[in-house]
Amino acid sequence: MQQSLAASEASEAGALVLNGKFTQGSLFRGQLPPGSQVTLNGEALKLNAQGKFVFGFARESALNHTLSWTLPDGTTGSRDIELEKRQYNIQRIDGLKSSMVSPPEETLKRIRRDSTVVANARGNISDLDAVFTGFIWPAEGPVTGVYGSQRVLNGIPKAPHYGVDVGAPTGTPVIAPAAGVVKLSDDLYYSGNTVILDHGMGVFSTFLHLDSSKVKAGDVVAQGDAIGTIGATGRATGPHLDWRLNLGKTRLDPALLVPPRH
Ligand SMILES: [Zn+2]
Image (tube, rainbow, N blue to C red):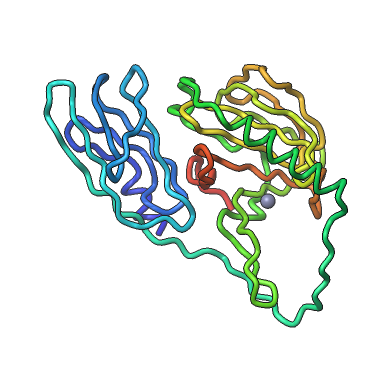
């Protein structure tokens, strides 16, 4: 797996420059001459002024896709994209005593309010160029949870885990993996102190369970700037950073953007 990913990381087909891992959960970054038009499976993608664009594939995305384009001079081209099917870590636990506890109305209200503010924070597509730069890990520490893993309790699949978890003591610095603009810094019910960073073109990083946040909405941060510290706020079982990557509403795997770490 490692080898095929490395081999397919960047490729060119004529005018097209494409960068991404050919697997489910992956963010792709591409470029064509400015003024080109591009579609993915027939749907138009947005290009910025430099002809750069992004697209991504969800956890259970289909494996075969087609990118097609028309250059400013009318030349057309296309490129088939075949993704490797991922094996997710699925943990089945049976024979659990069922405890049907629904949260009280006050808590439900708060959870609904949280989803609205999070959706609003990721609701805008900006022209920031940061998404096209390299990403770095936002914290030191071992990976303790991976994208896509899922627990099946008494035969009922729970929501998959969509972030990459870095386990480290409370107070460990969290830095910006790429430049961006802070869209949210708030205390949410499930994810505790949460920061959302806009990297541009609809791509957002989210940092969960922070002990402290060092930023506020509207702040502009450079790659490597301190944004907070690792903690266990919200519904966390112990101190860790849960780093998530969104392309709009599609949840992608942030670990595919940074050097492998175990
Ligand atoms: Zn997590």
